[in-house]
Structures are given as structure tokens and as C-alpha cells.
Figure 1 (cartoon, rainbow, N blue to C red):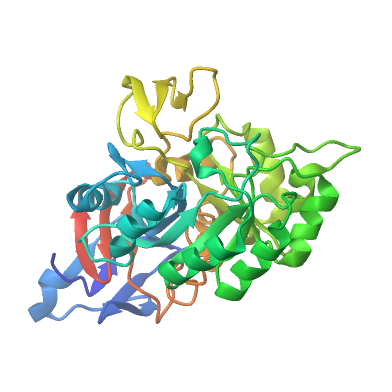
Figure 2 (cartoon, rainbow, N blue to C red):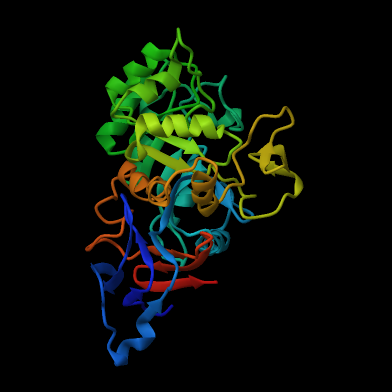
Length: 383
């Protein structure tokens, strides 16, 4: 991978606007943003000219179970590396491995965290459970659902050694409040999700330390004018960030717009909830978590019609926010870059184009198709 020292001719997508400006990179970091950044003749091979293109921060997908045929819960080292390379074509430079907890899956996934495969970087682990409500599992197998257990959570936290970034918890379960407090103390984000909690129980969880929400609206008590439920608690609490799956299937575009308007882009992380079939064409009957799944009309479903994740890619999520929800490009990009980075405590080094931050970038053409991806100042992928 060749180094890139300057990018010229493009529009930079900042958190609050798009600007026509050049960008310089030094030692893997963004060093300067300005008008004209001349490139010495000796370094002409390290310049990237992108007329008419957009430069965005590399996309960060907080919630992804697999991609391009790779299931993160049961893949070997070569498969994970192949998936991370495939993610570059979707503009993705960082992601969380989203998994159902078992001791074996934690041991297997840990070596991949922050490993340099040349592709997108696994920034940490997102456990969707196991302390969730058995009546709101969605596609999660029952074996990945356990009653609150402080000793088990302590073991998970200790073994993860800082790699556990988010864990979904149903706050109505007996003992769940103590789990939430333990996660906060460990520096992981407790997330409200896979729950039957009412509004009061959700607010108790938020008071204990819940700061995030697992795919808002899905697998939780809905919003009702007399019982706001988990959705009402998440939308009304300014301390809580929300996840939205922007595939146009999990959430109607009108509700997508409404949630973003209520929370703002700085408290909204757009995710894919991608399954291994993301990045592939519809392929009929497949399996996920040991269950038969049918991928049809852009969505994987169980036999009973339950949605089982998505086939959404991060760059398509950006396009959907612009095309279906009518949002400005900088707002759409922010919800897949700076906000996710903030959720996992990495916004000081990732998630926006600013001097001193990692030079993790994607270059998009006028149709928002990915043309190139730069990771740490190196050209990692080019169409």
C-alpha cells in the first residue's frame, strides 16, 4: 500500500458542512487542511487528486455480525481478514464485531481486535446479550440468553481486557441494574435493547448508566402515547445515543427522520446490523446462528418472518440517509463516523477530518460510490 501525503481537488465532508479544500497527511495523521497544498516533485507519487469527489472520514459500523459471506461468530483468521478487506469497498475503516456471547466466541475473536489485516480494523467487541429478555430475542439463539450473573460478567470484562465496548442489557431483569453499573465501571457502554421493559424500568436503567440503545425500535417495547416504553425513554433522555438501521426496511423513512430530529446527529449512530449476506446478492435459503434464513427483497428473515439483521452496507446506509431521508451529506456521514467514534470513546482520534486525527478516509464520487480508501495515510483500496 502506497503512502498518501496530499489529497487535492475534492470537497471535504466535515461534521457540519462540506468545503472545497486540500488535505495533507503526515505519519498516518491528518496534518493540515487548507487551500493549496503544493506537492514537491519528488513526492508526486504520494499525491491523490480527486476532482469532483468527496473525501469523508472512514465509515465506522458499530453493529455488524458479518459481511461478504463471513460470519464473525464462527470464522477463522483468514475469513476475518478477507472480510476486513471486503469492507473497504463499502467505505468502512472500522467496526465492532457484534456477537452473541459464549466463552468460545470471546476467546476466538479477541486476537482480531485492533489487528492490522490491511483492511477495516476491528475496534472492539459488541455483545448483544447475554443478559437480555428471552421474549425479545429476535434472531438471537436462546443459548445466548442468560439470567443476570455478576460473576460471569466480571469474567467477561476481565478476559476482554478493554476490548468490550458495548453490551446489550434488558434493565427489567432481576439484577440487571448491578450489571449496568459494572459495565460503566469497566468503561464499556451498557445498551438498552432486546427488552420488554416499560418506561420506568428503562429510566431506572438509564439512571444506573445506560448510555446507548441497541437498534432502536427493533426488539423492544414500542412508543405509545400512554406508555412510552423503551423507545420513549431512549428518545427523551439526552444522555442516551441511539442506533438506527437505515435500510428502509427495519424503520420507515418517516420514523428515521423523526428519531434523528429528536436526538440530533450527535446522538444518533446509524448502523447496518449486517449479517454475513451483506455485500452479496440475494441467495435464497441460508443459515444464521444455526437458524434457517431466507434473504429476499433486501432483507434476511426467519421462517416466521422475523427480521434477522440486514444485508445493508455502510455506504448504502449513507446513500439511504441522503436519498430516502433527505438529509445533507455531512449529516448522514456524521452518523456513521463521528457519532459512532464518540460512543466507543475514540472520537479524539477518529470519526472526522481534523488535524491530529487518524488519516482514515474514503473518497466518494458524485454518486457517492466509493472510489478509494485510505487507512493510516496508506492507500488501502482503490476501485
